[in-house]
Length: 329
Image (cartoon, rainbow, N blue to C red):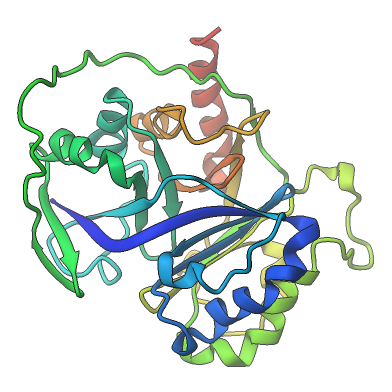
């Protein structure tokens, strides 16, 4: 197994809902006019609280300074597990539960905080740039470490971390944050970049103008529905996460779908904003799912975390996580 350290230097930021119009010009350019920027890594996720942006340094230049824009202090690097070689974007998705025990848990054991972004194509593990030496030391025994430089993978040189680290004892990580499961069902999908212009207006509406709009007959706010939408354009590949109702607005045969038409349910992690310093949050969720052999997508945002699991598994997922939650009480 190979662990690729991608060349993008990333910023993680939050845009307040009331300030989104200030950033819309730059966001539209990043999402729909990539040829007009040098950005190679862009993700936008809307939650009820805010918009979370993950963007490389070139893309960050497109966003204006604003009191509504909060930026996490650290620079982040994206890691990607690749099975059998090949580029990160063309490889088969592995799923956060498949890397829970080999990547997520060891990093948590070494007190390394991670920020997750699962896409239709693959899973990105974001770590602080300053933590990279420890990350490499922690994972070098399990993975062939490669750095991506100018699009080519080369051997990752040791960063001088050799001695003085004691292998930590494996400890149980009980869930200490509240869990909730909205009633929406979600689709994880993609589309051909060549078709993006044909649905650009629709996507702009979904991204920026739909959060307060209720369709006739739509359920009220107390129905347990959640506002959640994620768009990623990373190295030319598009990934979309949206609820089932939103997918119906798209023309037929535009969105990629699996043969089973699989739907996903969400588990939302956090009662108060989680912050960036606590370690082990992703491990608390992904390890029990890995033990139960349940696949999952995982999307961290500026304030909360979100796991997506197959609709038919939601009850067993909640049961497994509640058991782990009880262990922490």
